[in-house]
Image 1: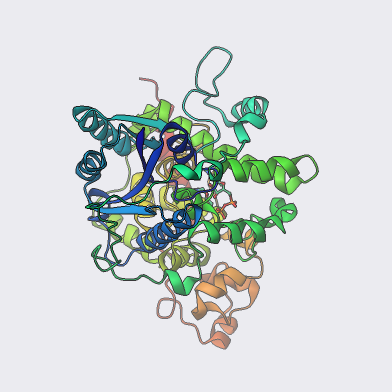
Image 2: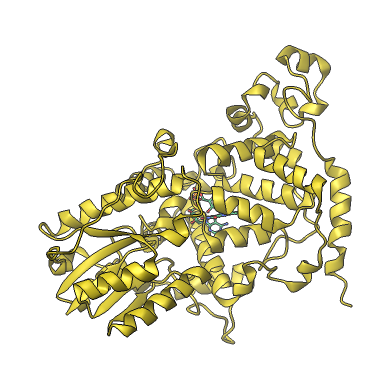
Length: 482
Ligand code: FAD
């Protein structure tokens, strides 16, 4: 009869599974978003993700009112979700709460508490798939096991795919069930300040928010998707879609994106490659579901035998990595990108992760945690998968003896140094050839650029060839079966 749709990482109307199911199951439906204090309180007071969230929640509120004039819009609460949800459900006297799955272990624990408390007031909680195309155990091997290798997973994923799985949920058709706000129930939209935050630089970065922002990025990307295969590896080029933050908050539907990719994949190599990236996303989500120990531990246990560098020198190396002063320009420019924008190009994520683990000999978990606090698109499954890939400890990871050379990567993927120059203006005057390893630059070039290594730009904090040897020795323990 009456239902409450709890929106979390699905902040949109278009093709929203939880919203659709809520509208189908009840005659009177309300929607709520909870600014969950256990998640928000530990964050820095200026956080791009909170800005994005706040703007997108506001946009969804307006969109819901537009969908059903006179309806309550998006009710908003600021507090612990485990308290706020049952309280609102009781006040609205709903029989059901509907939400989409969030398979992060912490979210599962939170949802279990909410479900229990709702049961105490006679209210059911239903959760549905929304965030991925195939979740949990939907794609398994013939023997009923989860896949541990991407390529056969992708083959099975594609074989399983049909129109049914990509069909959009027709939310608007059922909008009539969206109810008005009952007397005594506050709408409760807090300002950013009321949430205890101050604006970040999100607006100046022109990162578009909400469903409309995702639509604009998608339109732009579809115009260049055919070039994705070649363009995506060059950080100075507008190659990727930049939709990751929208996927994280659900301001775009993954089915929608997969549909767009699928429709073009036959004819367009770029679209087929992009579709593979969406499959990687599902892959890492199912890894997390089947192997939750990856949060905190290596997917392959023998990799937890590795002795990482610790102590003051390791801490200083870690600080240099975080602050982009390793002396390797591509690494430092990439860290400047994440630190100033919250985004980092995929190629560079691989380069800096490899550098942390295999040049500095630091535990991948330190890098993972840094990314988790700094990435706008932080996603536990993808971030953990990416870090364990780079550390070689993960599911279908890079073999440990494959070690990126940060200078060669720079020469290949930023040949004219356009990306490096954008983020490290102090190096801008160096000739292209000297940009990738400034410590090797001819004195005449350094002098012409007015650059003193060690004063204007750091000398490299590690010698790559020596580090490579140390890494091979460090990783030898993974072969030791004793
Ligand atoms: P596009 O190239 O346009 O790709 C489209 C979408 O596909 C992305 O938005 C993303 O959802 C998905 N995707 C692409 N590559 C991957 C991948 N390798 N694994 C999983 N999904 C992928 N991605 C995150 O969304 N959140 C993270 O926290 C994250 N951490 C990473 C950490 C490391 C060390 C590495 C190597 C990769 C990480 N990635 C993460 C994957 C990838 O770098 C980003 O998804 C991508 O750069 C986002 O930019 P885009 O939306 O423009 O990507």
